[in-house]
Amino acid sequence: MSGMYVERGMYSLKKSIRDFFRELLELLFQSAALVIDTVRTFFLVVLAILGSIASAISVYDGFQSTLTQWITRYISVYLWLPVSDLFSSILARIQVLMLQNDISELQNNPNFSLDSTNAVYIIFIIIGIVGYFTIPTVAGWIIQAGGMSGYNKSLTNTAAKTGAIAGGATGAVTGNIAGRLKGSRE
Image (tube, rainbow, N blue to C red; front, side, top):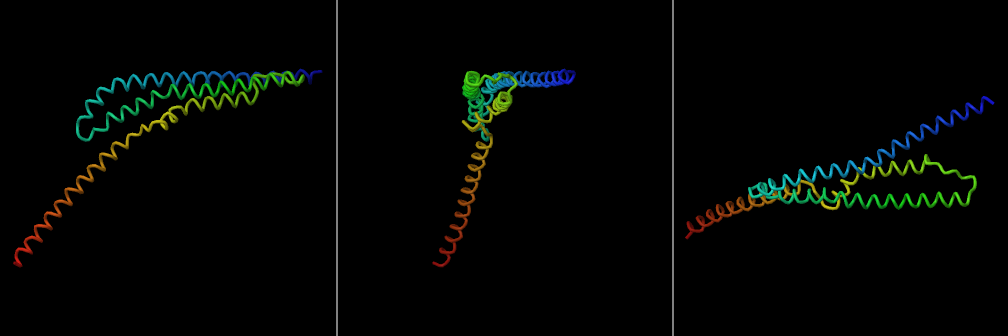
């Protein structure tokens, strides 16, 4: 008889640990979406403040790409919400399919017990948490917000101008020497 009490106690402990872990993951899942929205709002406010500075600086040589970089960063951060909404709708659809599967299992199998600490549900929550924190990366894929493209363009233009000046100077010197040599033969 005491073996059953020990078994029941072990089952209760195991269930309590699973419930705690599930509640912790649900809290992290719900807070992940809130963190993304809060950080997005903060970034947009900072970018809105810096927008006028970026447009003012962009009139100077070497800073022409500042405005386009600011615009791409603003759009990239602004896209976090639509990407988050798309991800949330995919997660909601998967949750509906999981619930439909549980309902059909309850109807067809009398021995099936509905348990909220199901391993599939816990894995689903973990995928959701990781997915929410990949939203900035996915939004960055939609519009490339890297800062090196403007710098590379500026560097390439400067190198091309320097090459053209050096080529022109070389041509002028060569032409001058050739003209002098040709003039001395006549």
